[in-house]
Image (cartoon, rainbow, N blue to C red):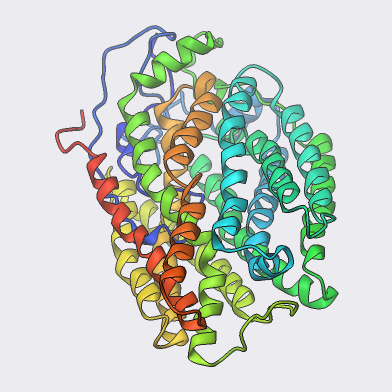
Length: 515
């Protein structure tokens, strides 16, 4: 049997990820990944065959033969899933809301990082551990939820994970200053909720829509990444200013998380796995053993290489996403535009708010631009998706690198470069969301999502925030104490991200080709 869900051209663009800000310093060029065309059994299938709704086949996005009877229309989808189009759209809206909370919580800490450093009296290396512990926990738990998500009710898994995440996040806001280790522990436990959601939610969308409908819904889903990330920076800084205490910034998302659990329970229904992608005469796909899933994924070159390419991006994303507001604050201090953040004082800066607004706006512009450009180009070029992805990556690199290099000269120029670079980078997010869904069969998608998370975080952003902070601390010890040395130490340590592009290039064998 030929399994559904594969299209090699969708796997060309793996240098970007829907998880990130600031991956702009890494240029991971697109490559042509090989695809094995011979049919296999479900247990041994590595490339998972072509299905309706895949570019190049009747009914695919941009293919004029969209009237192919094997591609479900609106009524066909309703008959297969048992859900009306309105109910399916409402489910996506709930998932978007939770995705927004996911990234909002992740970047709230970055928005108040200078205050956390002052409260706990810690250096850059310890600050970097906050993100490293969270990512490490998220990485370890992802395979667990990936396994469960391919076999059990995904709705209840997400409900339990998000409820636990909300409780732990609320608890982290009551930690006394002499218990920094407890803050690290609670941030690690937050990974439970993130892992339960991130590995499962995209597979629900894949089981509700196909072809152009899926692309549109994924674009809506990934709008929540820049908006949620920006709101995290904004909420962190503004709630702290209003309440006069940074702890209140961590008490916003738990209440919204309770609302998310209620919406999940009341609105979301479990669609049949892979039903919308099956050929009309194909039997249902049944889950195979976990080891069979791992063997198949290990022999899937598109999955492995896309994960390796994403790893280089994750390294840069994790380090710069955490350190951006602190870096901009130190830049303003050096330029004389903001007073320094002294022990015992609240760190007053507008950069978390401005950076959050820029992130929201550039994300919405970039995602919309990328989807529309890809849709138009796909009519004449089946490789439009990877071409748009590569253009966004390559175009963003010089602008975002300049934003880092020019920070000591002009904060206005820095924000201009950030705006252009992040807009170009955001063109990738919705497009690359289809990659894993097209290279892995439905009964393995949660497992594949989980192990892509493990690989990219293990070698990427699990350690990069701590590493950047550690290098910054070591550099500061070599120079006389000053606000300039604090700025230069963080600036030079962040330059490490520019060299990660070499590692990204080394992971791409140039001999791969497209069948």
